[in-house]
Length: 428
Ligand code: HAM
Image 1 (cartoon, protein in one colour):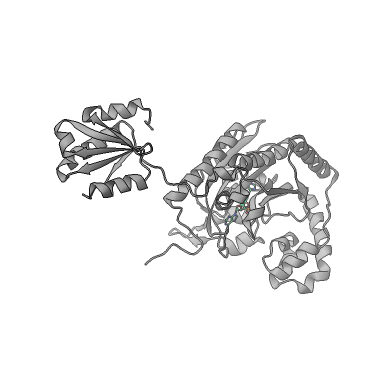
Image 2: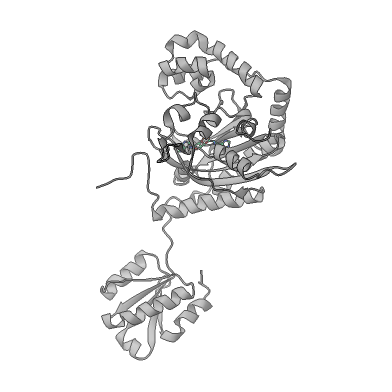
């Protein structure tokens, strides 16, 4: 049997209700803050990500799915969406003169990581990008919106860590400081991290090897921001205070993608175990220019949808566990038509069509089974009503209408059935 690839998963009908809930809640919240949806292709020129994310990063060096297409072009399955959205904005001139272009997205991303709970090779993100302003208010608003999204979903026990990497010049001094901190431990770092020490010392913080993790957790870290960036970060924190967002300042938050400048942040959730980052983001003030656009500051974030779904499946993560959305059932039909006697199948099939034409969700068994088996199925799929067609009733132009929730039933004229459902207002 051919199975799904390692690190990929089918999202089954039973789970879709939860996924819809997550995506629709995101849509509602992002709309309130003025964001519009964008969908970009899952394949892009590999160079887009190499230039944006950085060629010393794990994503580009080890995790990106890259292939040559039939025309010999170097193509990548997108490992994230920020670079694609910036590319789309430049290509389609989506920048608002003097304003902020606010976009949100949801869709699959691909990274060849070692799969584990909460980490997949094809995973889904829901995220936003606000392009066109360096105002610290936007930083505070974007972080507050991420929190609003979590709260609206009903998820609790999350923590926000913020940091500022400063402008491009500051990043160079931040790196120098980190180099000094790591230098005494250089011999104990893995071979990859020795290379990272020379090429991009910040990437040592992303190393997944336990020995390097221990070193990274214990090295001295300090801020090295210029006056402007220090003031910007102060204003971001002031904005967060104004909006009532509780955060921790942590200089170890350096993010695994090179495009970040100034504000960076991560949100973790306590019940997620080792892969506890549910959301991450930050400013990328140089990316638009680097990809060929005008000098345009920007900020954004992305949530991992699998991780949101994992948190929502744990009652301990929910503000209202009694409203747990852990195991929602797939959508149920309003009406199930059960047929007693094979000769009535044509009539039942016609009624099924009439109900659907009237936009009433309805279902029947297509193979002749006993009435008992059909009613069991109606129960199982959660139908609200059953229309039972029996020979005796049918001769009088009647059917039995059974309310599956109240366990009551009545005889009705067959010709009135569609109208009856329209009247009780269960038209979808
Ligand atoms: P990221 O930190 O690489 O940032 O990913 C964001 C979130 O995606 C993570 O916090 C996590 O929840 C989820 N995620 C990442 N990798 C996996 C995986 N292999 N399996 C499951 N979930 C995963 C970005 O992607 C940036 N583009 C975010 C951003 C937007 N920055 C600015 N704008």
